[in-house]
Amino acid sequence: MLKLYIAEDEEIIRRGLICTVDWLRLGVKVVGDAPDGRTALAGIRETKPDVVLTDIKMPRMDGLALARELQAEHNHAKVIFLTSYADFDYAQEAVRLQAADYLLKPIDENVLAQVLRRLENAKEEPLPEETGPVDGDGKNWTDELIREYHSGNPYVKHVLAAIKRGYQGKMSIEMLAAEQGVSMSYLSRKIKEETGLTFGCLLARYRLKKSLELLAAGTWRVYEVAEQTGFGDYKNYCIVFKKYLHTTPKAFMQQVAGGLKLEE
Image (cartoon, rainbow, N blue to C red):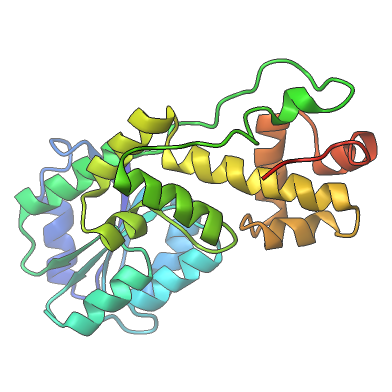
């Protein structure tokens, strides 16, 4: 069940959303609500929702600023913008902020249901555990990380190229689907069919591969490697590293950095 947080400054609309939408039918639990972005930010940090439904125009902190704060904090909640203003500038900014969708008031429950269903279906699967501990030259760790993925599907090829080109920055399946004019569900399905992995796993693996190259060079601190390879947060980098490689970045540097070479 998706956890949803609602940010809307008009109390009648906010209460209407909470009380009149059949959230149970939609497979959603409303975990909190707020009348402005600043209050919502604190509530989102506490309740950790999967989805944030937020008005764009709000006092203290508007919906766009709220989305920027969540991005800066590497919060993975999907943001759906809700507004009365059918303004293309807002839509453009929503795309730049990797919004899950952009809905106009009064909200159409059927349209909202479609969006939420799409987000539920696209929830990333957990990162897979790798089999076996590291051997002497570290190859058990990196066989999958250095594997090259190829695809005959032009949309998937675009994604693979985009990961190589932009792995250091912000990237999402929503953004790449929008760039190509296809639905996120279609692109997600094709990526899984062609590579056997989700977009999130592909991106994490490539970032890890590039991070190993920097660690092996021995000239960067771990937090610098995390920043330069798109992980951003040191703690998040260590968690992902441990999941795939069953060790820590520091231990990797001590044990195998001298002998490991990765091919592009």
